[in-house]
Length: 312
Image (cartoon, rainbow, N blue to C red):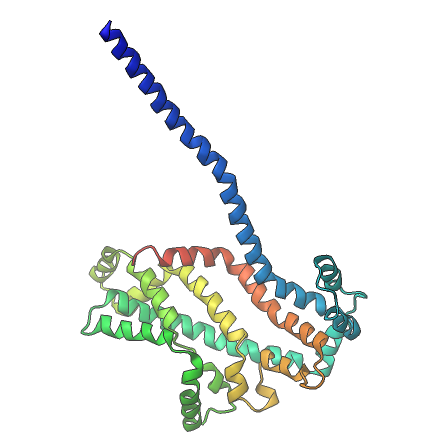
């Protein structure tokens, strides 16, 4: 009799334990949709914050001046704001004015020159520096790399005066070189390539050395093919920075014939009477190459950013 009582007690305890175990997932299942709703809410808010200004810019570029000014008097209600965003009537006159009133094609050509002349040397120099810091041992290597990383924390505005003095001494003020050489070596690029190249096994480099390859041959034949995704990812950053560069060209350039498109957009702005619709049309034209380039390279961009953190 006592044995049967003990057996029943053990069975009851087992049922309670099993009931507690099965109850826990049910609570987690009930809590899971709440977490998903919160996550989606945060993502939607992020999309609105990031994409909203771009949508407003594009829609405003198709408005008349009166229609654009009327938007600022729209009641602050969601329905009224959404209706006010839509151009009524839709017009393409702003885009015609952008290409007829200003030398927009010349601005485009200048931006293309600055971007291409920065892009290729930057990829070469930053990847080569990353290879040196990742795979070559020399005294003070880690200290030098740490100093380079620290410069990432220095705002460009602090370095701007010194850079301008250097351009004056070199005679590169109001020239293509004055814009191109600034930004050829970026600490972020050196860091990204160094992290990626550290993930390449040393055995591959040793095998190349046994075959008689020198340092530059190893870099060109072994390292570069393996860091293609990182090259593609960083090329997007360089393209975006170079194409949208505004402050430095505004300071170092005076001649209209050398101005890039971002500085050219400023010509549509007047402190007393800014032409919003033409500025938005010019900005839409200016941002189009960046969007196209990103869409073309986005798969390699994601792969390259993922590869960067494989090995610290």
